[in-house]
Image 1: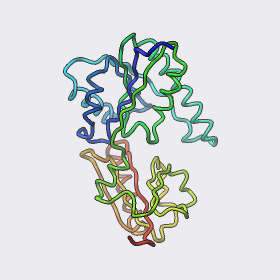
Image 2: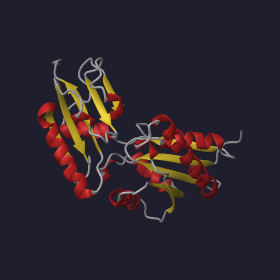
Image 3: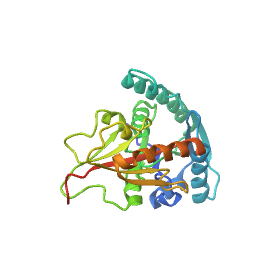
Image 4: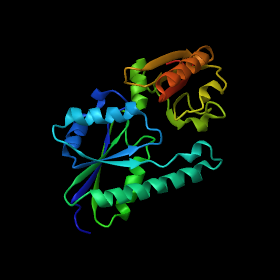
Length: 259
């Protein structure tokens, strides 16, 4: 196979704060010939503006931008979650593949700006790998890490992610529907559109919750889960009504072990 003279860069831009873009990410943004921007269903203006601001801050030359309209996310209502995700990824793959084939020219660098880190609960990397494997010509893939919401959360609360000699699990909220796993003391919960923390047994658990991490709208609440969960529900609902969207995550931590 001939050497790749096209490149696709997945650039982690952090969880929210514009200063969380690394020097490596800045260099990658400056090298881009074309930027592929995924516009989600009902995209939030704040997030679109944040992408534009990052590019404008770190480039002095115009950047060709191709918008990719994201397919709807049917798994929010489907009874078959894995099948719905598979269909959605296939739709994304077709759209992205066609755009890259049409817009990424010989000796050019294309890129996606990825919220947080491209390797953590992000489908962009998996789709890009499949796209490149099926491409008609070689494309080199580069992945630039970013500050994830996990580390943004623990930094904001000024706590360590792990406790000495103990494991940490990172899980989507749907895996906690039955409660806190019995084999781990610390769980970072992501993708919780149903506020699962308010539905599980709170006994012996502390929560460190954060929304809009790294932005001027950042909200932090921590404490005994039984004592603060209603406050989190209220504050979250108020923020959603005020801003029209909410991105949040949290750490659940057992109190039955002391370091």
